[in-house]
Image (cartoon, rainbow, N blue to C red; front, side, top):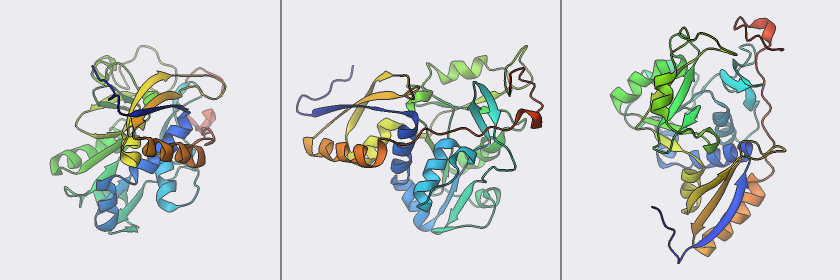
Length: 274
């Protein structure tokens, strides 16, 4: 049982999905291993909607975040973005954007280098799950062997909206792209990962403000679907700074509009209107 020390002050607030993504992005770029990789190592920022927010923080400008991903869950189905408008993963070497492909840079990875990959699921034990519609496992399928073999940093930013009871159970009941009797949307497998550096809203608040935080409620309506309500606990001075930060840099973040591939380009046969 976790008890908050009585000496600590507490603050309650709610974050929409987009606000959580912005918070997580701002914390990810301040994570020690990420800063070290940017300053003198290698960093690969793979596709993903949350990673699109991270890319904006790194570049200091707005991008088309909805297209900084391949797989996407949108319109009530598993889908993909349009390959013609998709933004490719960005790579840094020795503090500069690299012109090399992420696969070429990955081949040179070592223990101090960082690979950032989003996820589709996270559980209370810190395990994450990644949906895979690609028959060879997509980005994570190509990267995981090198990352684990060489001890590189695998950082996974993922919002608490994606919390499920058990990633292990999810993997056990997901039969793979050819194993389903029926499906609506893309068929996918699910890769479970443990021993990764997860950054949810809770870790983000710790990185940025040194406060403890707890998810106390979830969900909402009117644009707050998927929202998470948090209680942060810490010194009053830290919570004062957190309040200013949330009001000035996080609250009001526009909801992310999905840009899935047009159905006429797809052979998934979702049997749903476009």
